Length: 457
Image (cartoon, rainbow, N blue to C red; front, top):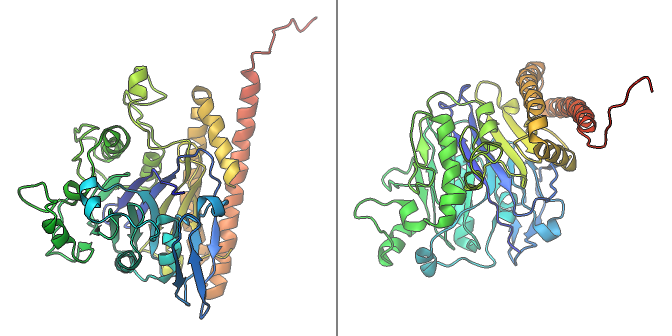
């Protein structure tokens, strides 16, 4: 059975970020609140045959014999839920994130229907990331697979390297468009077609499936008098979009461009913008865990009951993991790729930095987030202080590790970064256990089974 991913995506170009890094980020949301995942390293292969077969449909293919080492965040119960490796950064510092469901409209699907047993997002990262050499190459490589096997669902896919970010939208059985995010811009979207005007004379910033222009013209699919707007041609403008999708894009742009007034239900909110200030990792982290703070639509806020439940929040209790894939350009390539991984939901739990050059907890942080959310008024300030302090630690920790890597290379560097990752995880666990203890003490004090007694009795 297809596991649709109701996700939110943020992409930040290198000149739009505070430190000149590229960052692609996403929440992995499922329709089940409990879908355990694990964090693993898929080892490199050389001259070794491998075959992949989906557990969710009849797709299968032979994989190339040479593969790069990649981290992955697959489902634990993959035989019932599919692989869904989700996100990772390969040895050549190419990042990929690939399980955001996107929906084409019935007009376009009538002429290029979905392919039931095609390549879907459950097998996509496994079939692509170990074999690509740049973000641009990732789009081209995946495009060839979609041409060969077709797609059983609409999917949006993120690629980045130290220089470029590409966003690819596969919306019918075989047709797709990809757009490069300008270096000085950011983009945000979730679960609907986002790419707007396509410039077919500018291949530096656009790529597309073979024959897509002829397909649109032959079947009279372009509703506009002028231009070629991918969202207008292939996208949807439904009630679900207005209450489930566009509002997320609206709020992220409200955070990054507070000077711009927009309607949260506007189906034509721009996909790409220049932020009012340079964007930090912490800005992305807050946005991915946000729930319309300081608006009437915050479920924890003071709006009416109807307002508090009008729009689907960005951070959800069924966010299984969130990630920020960062590629730095100011340090050597063998220590430039960092996966900021949040297991269990980004609203209340931390994004832990893992250097991708490494060798080979879900329940722990998932239950932690559940306790904070269920006692939000009592615990939110404790949690905010905890996350702020960890963010301070992580920033310093990353620079400390990079400095300690000086003079190391090859296997020695990989072993060093692996051990340092483990130390970071141990510190995070220690600080989390401290907060667990504080919350347990506060919970005891909240008990209704208490009674004030005269200490002299």
